[in-house]
Length: 150
Image (cartoon, rainbow, N blue to C red; front, side, top):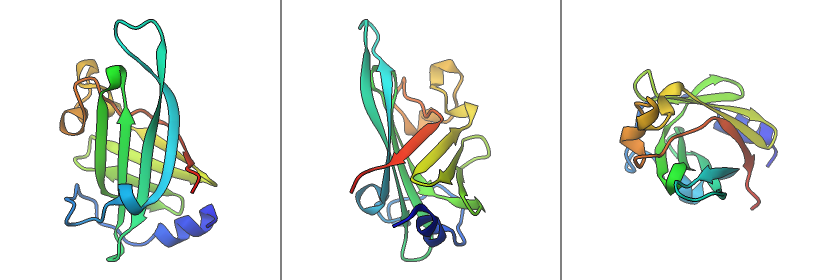
């Protein structure tokens, strides 16, 4: 499926809210998958560790667009964010549960650019969002995700 077809399929009407598994199917299991490869620092270790963040987006049978985002941060602390996305434009989707914790996804071919609001910084660095979704040193960082091979 081409990126334009994918976004055309996904862009419908959405509601904006954090959802339970009962409201949205398991996007991690059945959604269109994207990967972001990056380096992670481990305290007490001189080197960096290579990790993959994972993003899945799925159109639910009821028309909602569901997503699941799993990221890795310092010391291997993880964030797991899922919910429904809202259409902002023909190639832009967003999640914002409380007006502060915004995640925006921009499509460009087989690439999705994630922009995370400053509130997604790890809790010790001033972030407010990770306390609900992440381990102590977890955060969600802006970056580019590439469509995963099937």
